[in-house]
Amino acid sequence: MDHFYELLSEKTKFCHQIECLITSIDRINNDPVVKERLEKLKHSIESCVENCGRVYIYGSRMYGIAKDDSDVDLYFDTGDCFSGKIADDYTRQLQLIDLFVKAANKEFIGLEIITETRIPIVRFTHDSTNFNCDLQFRSGLAVLNSELIKLYLSMDERVRWVVIAVKHWAVSFQLLCDDFSTYSLIWLVLYVMMQYKIVPPIIDLWRMHQKHAPIYTEGWDTRICFNYDQLKPKKSSKSSISKLELLRYVFEFYSESNSIILQKYVLCTVLGEILPKKTFYSTFITKVNAIDNYQCQTEKFEKCETLINTNFGSFNRIELQNPLKLCNNVIPWLSDTNMNVFIDLCTKSANSM
Image (cartoon, rainbow, N blue to C red):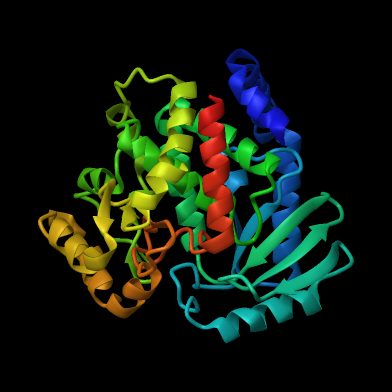
C-alpha cells in the first residue's frame, strides 16, 4: 500500500481524488433510481411478514456517504420495539431472524445468520435491487445514532470531507470489517473534530434541547437526535483550519506517540474531553451533574457501574464512549493486533503528509 502513502504526500492529487469520490457519492445518494430501489427493498422485507411492522435504513445510506457498492444496514421494527422492548432479549431477536429467514422468498439470496457480532443479524443479497444487506431486530438505537451522525456531518463541509477521506483510507488498507465498522471510524474522526472546535461535544447539543421532552430508546434519552433543523444556524465553526490539515490531525491524534497516552483515558464524546480510566465512572458523574437537563442520562449511567468498569477498564487499548448509550465503548475491537495495525497506519500516514 506504499502507493497510498505516496498519494497522501501529493496533496493536490489526493484532494482531487477525494473531491471526485464525493461527487460520485453525492450522485448516488441523490439518484432517484437508487432511492426507488431502497424503497423497493424495504417493501420486500416488510412483505415477508404480513402486518408486522416497519423497516428503517440506517448507516452510511442514511447519512450520505454510501458508494454504489455499499451495503445497506436495516432495522426491522416488528411492532412497538423501536424504543428497545426486546433490546436485551437476544433469544427473541434470534427468533425474529429465524421467522424472517423462513418467510423470505426467492428475492433474498444467500441468507446467513450471524451471531458473532454484538447484535445478531441476517445477511443477504436482495436479488431485484442487487443490494447486499444486514438486517437486525434489536431496537431503533442504531437508526438514531445514524441521525446523530447525519447532524454532525451537516455542521461543516470539512467534517464530511475528512470522514469520507478517512473511510477511503480505511478501505484501502482493508481495515473495515464486522469488528471495525464505519460507525466506529466516524466517531474516532468526530472526536478529533471536537478537539479542534470544528463540531461541538454532545453536551452542547443537550443544552440546545433543554425545552424538549425526553425520548427514551433502550432506556437512554435520545432527544438530541430529533428537532435538529433548528440547530443549524447555531453550529457553524469559525475555525479556518483546512480540510487537509484536519485529516493530518486525525492521523496524528491516533499515531503511536499520542496513542500511548490515550490508552490511559476514555475519549468522552459527551464532554469532548479525555477522562482518566481509573476514575472514569465517578469523574463523568461529577462533571455532568451540574447540567440541568442531563439528569435522565446520569441516572441511567449510575446504574451501569459494573458494565462501565468492564467496557472502559483496559489500559492497553483506545476506548471511546458511545454518545447515546453511555455505558458502551464505540470501539471494543481496538485492542491487541487490530489496535497496533490502526496506530501503525495512522503514524505512517501522518508522516507521509
